[in-house]
Image 1: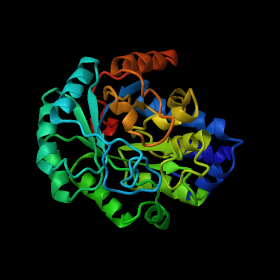
Image 2: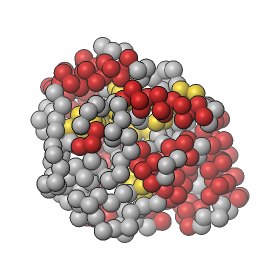
Image 3: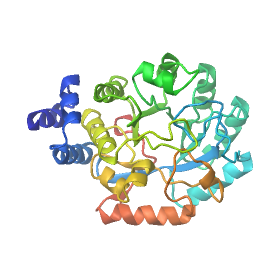
Image 4: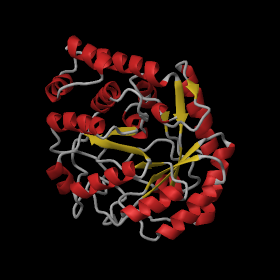
Amino acid sequence: MLEIINKAENTHDLEKSELVALLSYNEFDEEIFKAADRVRKKYVGDEVHLRGLIEFTNICKRNCLYCGLRRDNKNLSRYRLTEEEIINFASKAVSYGYKTLVLQGGEDDYFTKERLINILKEIKKLDVAVTLSIGERPYEEYKAFKEAGGDRFLIRIETTDKNLYEDLDPGMSHDERKRCLKDLKELGYEVGTGSLVGLPNQTIDSLAEDILFFKSIDADMVGIGPFIPNEDTPLSKEAGGTFDMARKVMALTRLLLPDSNIPATTAMETLNKNGRLLALQSGANVVMPNVTEGEYRKLYALYPGKICTGDTPAHCRGCITGKIKSINRTIGEDKGFRKSHR
């Protein structure tokens, strides 16, 4: 096992069988985390890049079984920010020092190509990098958003197991998901993807495939989070994922993608009160604090127990800065593009 970890740290390459072995046993987890932390330090340094997250709509036409925003969830109060509110939250986030903003929402057809282009152009006037996380769109829309100033695009594969994906995402196609990733890469976005760890019927084998998939597309960003069952979804009674397994998948991803940007995801902190710090010490180099304001924070209810929903963006910024400094890391001062892209 130690030889495999050593190989991963030095060559950034593993066979599927080697990944399966590392994922199957937990006696060597600390060694994996330490190796991932060394690789992170060597390739991306001690800076932690903050991305300010604006959750601009919780309306979604999709019906994914694991997601609280799913179309058939009648227990959720729906909202949609106005263009003015989005720009206002973006301006405030910049005043708190954010150099990157993430526009994230459900797949809401109200936000047409034209509306999103207007929003993008306004936000780009603030001299920030912009990441879009708005789901599946046609190639020409992705192209238009890139031309309007979109820098990055985040679209999780969720799982590379095609059957599992299509079971959990009714009416959606795994091939279409991959098409989106391919188009985005072709258009010159920094492309982010990722997976949920602990989905029902997910195997160790498919988690290994997930990590190899991230490497095969040379993902610029990879977000790994534990699956946390939501009581307002059909998967409410499922066991869910564990913090430890999500952290391990994330650490192995760092070993294979040494210079990618990897967030310490909020969901990890929902399962472990020090989750984000532990993730930052196991390969992560990005944190995405929420800069949405007011009641909207509670209504973007992907999963239960989401942290910081009662906080203000200013408080979040101060809190996460203090935590990052407590582990002798610094806040990134630039827009945080992938090192090999700068």
